[in-house]
Image 1 (spheres, rainbow, N blue to C red):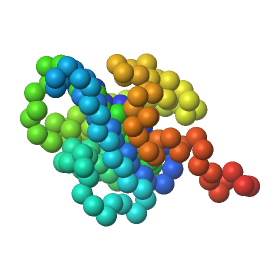
Image 2: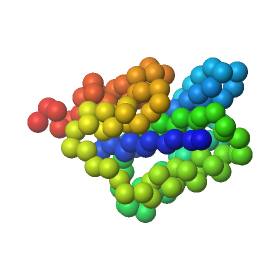
Image 3: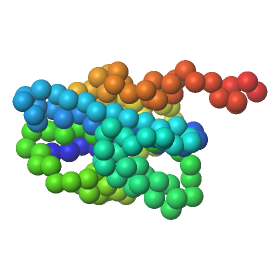
Length: 145
């Protein structure tokens, strides 16, 4: 009753996570998101332990690959979900990262893939996220050369 999509981008480290609980509580959808940029956070995430459990699994994988990347986690939780602690976020993130990755030549193709696999679609998630919106607009040094 969980779906995870993890987008790794060829950027410096930044991390953003969003959780969407769909009809799990009071037949409403609730979204929680938080992020950090290259230099980390100053305060504890309002998302709580799941934020850090997912972050840890991603950092561990990137360290194993000796890579740096931006990481965006889209998590949807569906009816029938039973809260069992943050370990589920860590283990499902690890599991997702250990499957054969889908490689996209264009960011738009990756976003389309995620959009097609989220029950809510990508738009409501993007509206509740901060960093993901800057992926298309933020200038990079290579843009000037």
